[in-house]
Length: 370
Ligand SMILES: Cc1ncc(COP(=O)(O)O)c(C=O)c1O
Image (cartoon, rainbow, N blue to C red):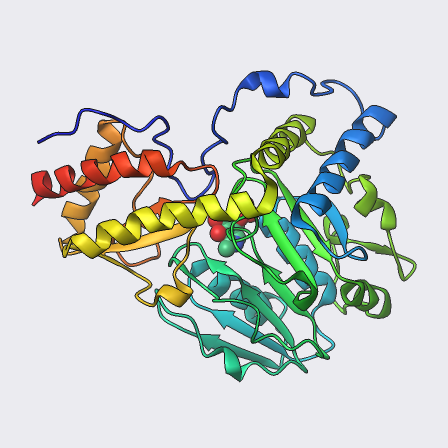
């Protein structure tokens, strides 16, 4: 029987992700439209985002947080372009974004001593292979394959190389041991349901040391430059952005941070995302036709949850279309480079109560299409 109730929010895209529950444009009314980002008001707004971020994530005191252009891609590429080169690099690849970083390192930066450890979609590489004398580049969560690293236990505390982590679809939804990471990046458009355009770049003291002691042999565009005369431009990490940011997007990020604080902070964000995954685990256990792409529970993502369905690709696409046409779930097809299937974003802004309705529809569309 066709279900009658629909989810309150049918947005299940893995980026931009659903806005936080109750979001309203009213929350953006204090945007300093038409005011300079370098004036005291604008700068205070940007500094507030940085301060609230540090507090919400409970970052180590000596870690720096900067707002940078071009979303997570901008943040991660400026880190790679500025820091990689003096050591060998170990790159962990298990889906399309991590593959993209490996391409950057091998084909654009053309670094000589690079080891790529690759796993197929739904799996992760053997983490014990990493040599922490090298720099290491990885994603915490593979957004397009639904597989994540299980924890940070495998990362050496005493390491010579730097650890560069693209945490965009993990941060605010998974436990991340920040002292094990030297560079952490993310986009505002993921777990907190912010807007794209800006990224966050977090640096450990060791990352700062690298920036101040190493000058890459290739040209660095202004947008990537974090040092001047061999010294870190500390003002970037206090709210003086490299170029003009969107104050509207910043206001939206502040609204998302305030929502996160209001519901109980990081533990509650993580709990919500895990509760969303639990809805799916229950559903998959009861339905033989749908399975997780990441079979191993230890590495199964609780944000970008990816599925295989026992139907040919065109029929899975029909399921995705039917879900959207019925305004039940938008954008829930697998990523273009991933194996055909379904992907539902389950970050902190998604309500488990909505997912419980979606699974009823999913059963219905499956039977319709089959
Ligand atoms: C793991 C990962 N890295 C990088 C990106 C790129 O993010 P953005 O488009 O915000 O730069 C994404 C986007 O989905 C992602 O999932």
